[in-house]
Length: 115
Ligand SMILES: [Zn+2]
Image (cartoon, rainbow, N blue to C red; front, side, top):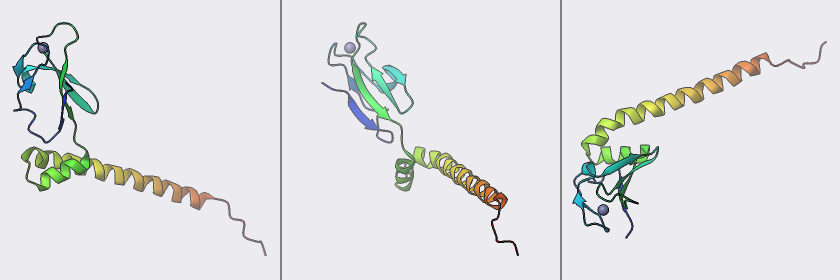
């Protein structure tokens, strides 16, 4: 049996997870949670050796957060501000890169023919 995969805005917090090895049942917060950069997973808290992975939650992308916020998910609405801020910062960064290139352009030597 493979682990259940959740998207971030699914109801993974209230889902009951079942260990296929020892039969343990519980919620996400009662399992052993590992956090990674793009996802987190829940392992059985009762199995000592090689605890099976029960569920995986992938963190939301900016697009998923926007979509969930549009559908009224309160957590996504809260998160939306951070997503938009991150996007604005990216735009600013791109803008300053463009500005830097333009500055460089101005400094380029001119090869106009001298009269
Ligand atoms: Zn178990």
